[in-house]
Image (cartoon, rainbow, N blue to C red; front, side, top):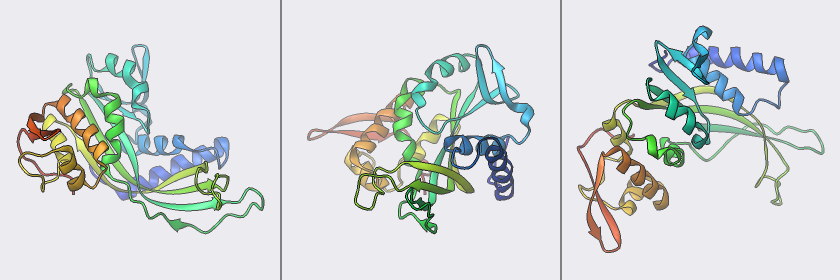
Length: 255
């Protein structure tokens, strides 16, 4: 199981898996399956560990009894599988986030493909928060772990949106990973404290967290709701109408 950033191995995974998928279905039909396949190969290059049947379910990866599931979205669909796997196995969910994205646009009328341009948006680890909330009933289980992979992606979209330039509300043609930027591993309960910036005061509100982490306050509130399940933060009072929180002990936060 891959446990350090390896750009060469990631490039090899991209070359091998994207080529295989294009050969099967043709470009334009890759979508999430591409990222899923690349990450599965990257974190476990030996295909003998892939698609392992465990009870009524199939694990994406199983190495020495430890299960790894690559999940790009909709963590709620994993609840039954997690309930079964966590009875006897450690489970690590690998969650990809598009860190840097290069966009191309395909004009459906002319067939013209625009040159790649870098998106002004940069993905962060905090994008996993809504997905964690969907499985928060498992967050206190010490057998559940996470790898949040920041990957660079080339994405092609159709010019079929509702806005004047046809970009807003457009649909994606395909997205291909090209590099891995970084990753965050959550192995123990105290690792969840990495979501709390070092600049937070000892006691803080969701508004304080949102400002320090540079995320919307409602997302900060959701994060605190999740962290309460892990017991690494606790409510210690109120500041007006807002709850005050305090972390159990300090740790290095996300940079």
